[in-house]
Image (cartoon, rainbow, N blue to C red; front, side, top):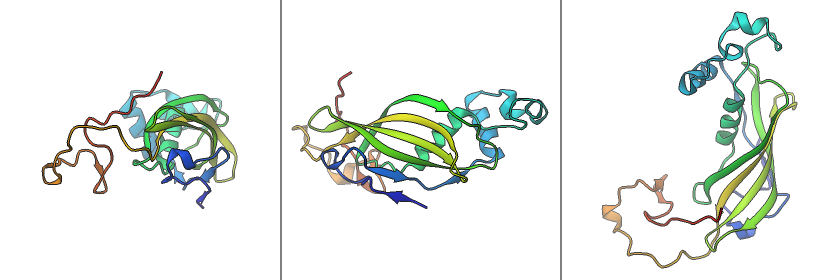
Length: 186
């Protein structure tokens, strides 16, 4: 069940600390783990060798921790017109193993808002990845660059729509015209 007080379409200036959400869920499959191992080159036997893993601390194969975090990012409904970039993932703690067949979801809360430029601010979330029994599997702090409603600085004349390549479009809507870089202070 998806529960939200966080408005993913809202501009940065309308967000508030304490805004929360619960994402949709996803079941972690054997195929997910095998494909992630192939993609990353992480063939640790706790993930890929059933005999080795059965004798290990969890008694069976488990999902990669980074797979869990990656799927969490995919479960959160980040609006590409507002969330310009993932900036940082910190304080990740893997509390319990994610087993093949576990269904995970993300619960999150805005814990911080920092204006950066006229065009964007930094939003800090506390994420908790949980299983179907509501046990905490992983927690992390996530920072994203979030667009404001401030007008963009004067830029070169945009290309006519008929010549647009669509490379900056999602679902037919322009995100940010080519060359509209949003500088972010380090």
